[in-house]
Length: 195
Image (cartoon, rainbow, N blue to C red):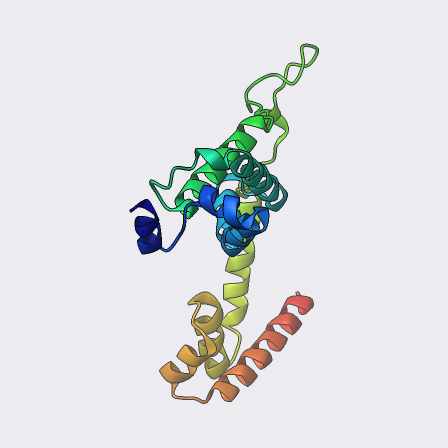
């Protein structure tokens, strides 16, 4: 009856197979599911080498304890559980990363901490002021362009529209918009160099 249940599940009792066919059959069963087992281990450990080690340890353990498999579940379920446990063991063996507080003093001799020497990703007030002045200057220079170039430059650079959107809005071809943007930039560059 147990053999009939094993056939219904699509797998046979590995202990009985080991008696009849030897270790080569166990290798056949394992090789069939090896990619799935590797993926399972990799999901836990996140490193290909550690995943390989976890699978190797799991398969060695499964082979040693094959007689303990009673056939109450599929063999793949049993192997997957062993691989999962092996991967979790790999994670426990890894040394934990040391985290440093940004507000903790670097050493006893110095009175500053890591947050004091790290640069802020945001622009400084001076940079924002300079950027604002340059933007105002550029807006003033754009007014000196011809009306057609001015509209294209304003839509493309100040409004942030794409070439296609600008072309549709102005009723021009994309090639015309690109040419006008290029001419507008050249004139702006020349005006900036004159000042």
